[in-house]
Structures are given as C-alpha cells and as structure tokens.
Length: 315
Length: 279
Image 1 (cartoon, one colour):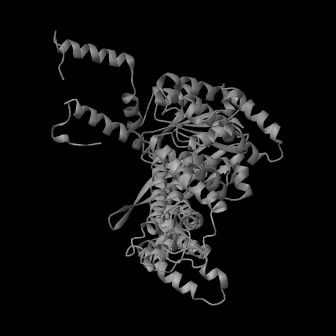
Image 2 (cartoon, rainbow over the protein chains, first blue to last red):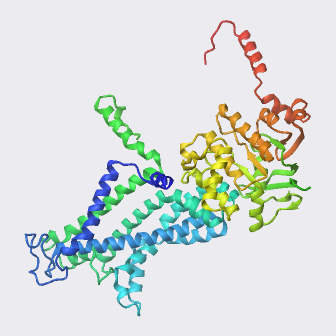
Image 3 (cartoon, each protein chain N blue to C red):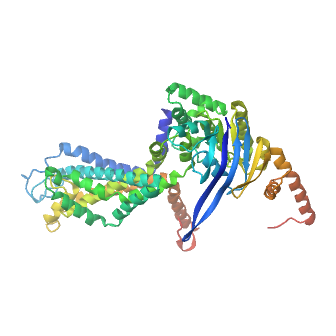
C-alpha cells in the first residue's frame, strides 16, 4: 500500500499560493453549483414581479420575466459545470486515443491520426461548433436529446480535442524512446500494457492539465454557443442566462444584477481553473517553479538599488 | 551448437536522410561470435562503432538487415509465444540506470513483472518472495522492494536492473555499457557483482564497453569493433598485451596509464622551470 501512495504523491502538484487560490475558487463554485440549487427557489417560477433589483426576498433580483436570478445562477452554474466536465472529459479521451496511439506506434498510423488531428486544428473552432450544433439540433428523431446540454457538451468535446492530442503525441513520442520502455519490451511486456502501465502514468500530469484546459474551453464554448442561441434550450446554464439577458435588453434597462453574476461566475471559474493549471504545469516543467522566485529576487534587488540598469527583466 | 547464443553474419544498415537523398550507414557489418554459459565476451569499441546495435538486435529491439541470431543452434526470427521463450533465456542490462527504471513504479514492479510474465503459475506471495531473493542476490535486500527509483543511487539502480534481467531465469545477459554512467568509485562494485553472478549462475555475458582495462579484467574473450566491423578478436590478455590491429593499438594508447601520465607530467614540469602556468 505504501508504494501506491508514493506513486500518487509523485503526481501531485506542490503546494503553492497559485494552487491554493485556484482550488478554493473552483471548490467554492463547484460547492455553489452542487448545494445552492437544493434550497434555492424554482428557477422557472415566473410569478414574481419583473426586473426587481437585489433585495432580501430576491438576493440577486429578478429577470424581465420574473425569474429569480439567484435560483437561475445556482441551476445555471450546475448546468455549466456539467457541460464543462462532460465536454472536457470527452475531449480528453479523444486526445488520449489520437495522441498516444499516434505517438507510440508511429509510422502510417501516426500519419493518418495526425492528418485528422491537423484538419481539426485548422478548422476555426466556434464556426464549426455552430454548424454542427445547428445541424444536429435540426436532425429529426433525436427528440428531447436534440436540445439538451449533454448533446452540446458532446459537440464541444468532439470539436475540442485536437490541440491536446498534439501535446500528448509529442510527449508519448519522447517517452516511447526511453530506456525503461525498451526494458519493458525486453522483459516481455506487450504493446497495450506498455502504453497503459509504463507510459500513461508518466503522462498523468500532462493529461490533467489538458483536462482542465478542456473543461475551461467547454464552459466558455457553451457560453458562446448559448449566447448565440445555439445552446441547450431545455436546461439552464450560465450561457443561456446571458442569452436571456441579451434578448431581454438587460443592459438597456440597467438590470446589472441580471448579467453581471453569470459573467462573473464564468470569469472566476476560468481564473480558478487556470491557476490550478499553472500548478500542474510546474510538475510537467519543473523549471517554471523557479520563475516567480527569480522575478521576486529581481524586484527586491531593484528596490534595494542593486537592480539591473533599465530594469531589464530576464526572468 | 547447443547451449549457446550465436551471432552469425549479422548486418544492420540504417538509412540516413541527407536532404533529398538517402545514405546507407552500415552500423554492423558481418558480425560473428558465440556466447557460452559461464563465459564473458567483451565487445569493445568507441561510441558509434555498432556495439549497442548488436546488443539491441540480440535483445530483439531491432531486426537485423541480414544474418541471424541463433539460440542453442536454432534460428530465432520468431514472434509471439516463442519470442517470450527467447526473452526468458536472453536478457539485457541497459546503459543508463537513470533512464531504464520507470520513475512512476516501485522497485517491486520492475522485478515482479518479469517474474509474472515468464512464470504465470507463481502465486503472489511466491512472486514477492522471489523478488526479495533476487534483490538479495544483487546485494540490496528486500527492503528496497517498496522504494522508488528516484530514492536510489546510480549503482543501486543498476543492481536493480541486473536483478530484473535475472528475474525470468536468463542464461545469457547482454550488458550494454553497464557502468559507463556510474561514478568511477562504484563501477568496480557493480562489475564484481556481474562477474560473481556470472560464475555462480553460470551465465553467458556479453560485456559491451569502451574501457579496455575492465574488458581485460572481467572477460575471457575480447572483440574489438571499429565502424561496424569486428577488427580483432582473441583471448583477453592476447588482445590487450599484443594488439595486432591499428585501431586496438590506438585504443590502448588512449587508455589512462598512470605510469605514462606521471612521466608526462614530469616532462611538462621540466619544460616550465619555476613558473606557475596561467590560463
């Protein structure tokens, strides 16, 4: 058991201010999305008066149609997190499939997989997502599923894996030539076991970073799609809230409580995930750990009048 | 020949891309030698001479362009279950102990996996017991099972690599420059361990090195390799004391000789009377 634990510790990021801040931000938002909908009022209850400013009975006021913004925010956060997680995970699985198989096996398989990856990379992201979303949602026979957040998440996953696949392929190619992989082959290990037991664990920090990046991209992508009216219509997300605010002319009627909260949650979630990602990057590239220290040392030196002339920063 | 590992007319070409056209590099050209249990053959040469290519071909990490590797007189150009049988007999110790152990896995993983692959009938407890036994054999002890590679020194890692090579029950070990990445002070310890295991287990060892002194001390036969060709071969002492080929002579000259170095230093001092040399 002890060696299992040590294996996990080898993969964990070192504690730092960045990691702590990021984890707290993401943790609070996730907790809000999980817990708040349980005791918030019905987000689709339109019996309230429209465009009420924040007050005791409506913490964040109401929308034009009389929906309670706090309840909408709680349900929308949960919906956006669901889309982000599902989209991020499906993008990561596709990136692992394409990137690691191409990198490990090389040859013609690499050529074919990378051709597909490169095509996905050069097609502009949002227009492709819009076209696919519009097309799939008008396909008959999908019923409820056609306008669900699950479908939007899957579309975002299918269009958002290419960048991660390129990163994973490069790393898998490098790991493939390590002597411990050759040693595993000499010991008699087979291809798939080498990929999953010898190579994949050493890719975990990189995959985690790509997953977080994927979650961020899916949350933002969903917000973009919904804002354009191509998002899930039978569920509430932060994006659909912004879309409602835009069509309801929230800015024109000065109802800041309608569009600022969903925007702020998206921005804070993105910031928190980015901070966690920085901490994970430091495992992948340990040199980054020293960068803040170098910058701090330089600042201190400048303050003490010993700085490099002209404040030339090289950190 | 039965009970031997034989390399016959082995050739390996690499295609190198130079701009638009390809050049062929003859990494190994017509190599022939026999490895027998209880004997050590040293393969000596500078880097790029093709020694490691031979090691990788014997370890079935590369396929030869032509020629063959014979185990107990039988051809070995097979795959699948038969290849597993070959690997049970022929194992390899890699050059860089810092790269040949997976940083993610414990030492136990490195030793138990080959045991499980080649002896699937063993129970978990038996595998563990044998892994501990193998670590004892390389003078490390069962306590190292739970350690991870980054906690070990280079010499300890190379001992683990040797235990891993012994795990399937190999009769032949290809040691590809096993001590070149280690501190000079611990090289002899690892080499003595290899020699001791070779005697006690009756192993056939192919010792690949660029160091003539250890080749002479630890092997019965020396093959000198230069640009893919084996240019000289013979009993260890003959090759070192009475080299025939120009390249062997040059290698011998290049080896550090304390007496000669001492004389050189005295000569240099005599030429620069009284002055400390500024540089």
